[in-house]
Image (cartoon, rainbow, N blue to C red; front, side, top):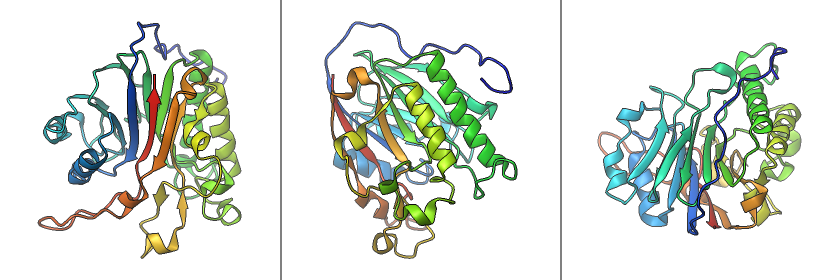
Amino acid sequence: MRNGKVPPRVAPVTHNLRSVFMSFTLATWNINSVRLREPLVWKLLDEEGPDVLCLQECKSPVDKIPVEGFQARGYTHMVARGDKGYNGVAILSKLPITEVCAQDFAGLGHARHIAARLENGVTVHNFYVPAGGDEPDREKNLKFDQKLTYLNDMRDWFRTEAPEKSILVGDLNIAPREDDVWSHKQLLKVVSHTPIEVEHLAETQDAGKWVDITRQDIPDGLLYSWWSYRSADWAAADKGRRLDHIWATPDISNAAHSSRILRDARGWELEASPKPIKPSDHAPVFATFDL
C-alpha cells in the first residue's frame, strides 16, 4: 500500500505449466552499457557459457541491443526493456523463453524489470533497483526516496501475487549483510548498506519468501560483486560490496547449487580502437539449478 491506496493488480508471477526437467546455469551481470562492453559479454559467453544471462544497466533501446553476436553464440532468445543511455534490463538465453511481464515500480517509467518463463515453468525475474543517489535521506534526496518506494512496491507485489517456481536476479543495489561489505561500521551511513535500505530489502525478500541462493551456497565470509571505479587499484584495495543477487522461491531453492562470483571479470579490459574497452564495475554472479 502506498499513499493510502491499494496497489493495482498486476500480472501473475507464475502460472501452472507442464513440468520439463532441465539443468541450467544462470548468470546475472550489471554490464554498464551492453553496446560499449559487448565484447566483454562475448568473452563471458565464450568462456563460461551460462544457459541464461541476465544483464542490467544495458543503457540501450531494445532495438539497438547488438543481438547478432549473441545469436552467433547460441543465445537466440531474448526479452528486454530499454532506455536510451541509462537503465535497461535483458534476459539472453540458449533455452526457449517467453516474456511474462515488465513492471514499472514506483511509477518511474524506467526500464528496470523484465520477467521470462522457461519451458520447465520456471519464471526468471531480472531487476535493476535504483541506486539511490549519495545521501541516505529520503526527504533531502529524491533518488533515495524513489529507491525505498521501488522496494516497497516490489514488496507489495510479492504479497499480492505470491511467487512460485521463480528465480529473482539482478543488481539490487543493496549489500544486506555485514560480510557483504568491506567495512560494516564505515558503510552504515553510505547508500547501499544503510539500516533502512537493508530493512526494506528484507521486507521485500520476506514478502516473496525468497531464499538468497548465493548465501545458501556460500554462507560465511566476505563476498563482493561490485568494486568502485574510484579506486586506483580495485583488486589491491578490495573495498567491495555484494550488490548483485540470485534468489529463488522455497519450492525450488534446494535445486540450486554451484554459486560463485566471477571476480576476475571486474578486471577484464580489451584492446580496441579507438580506445580500450574498460571493465564493468560489477562482476557476474552464477548459480546452477537442477529442475
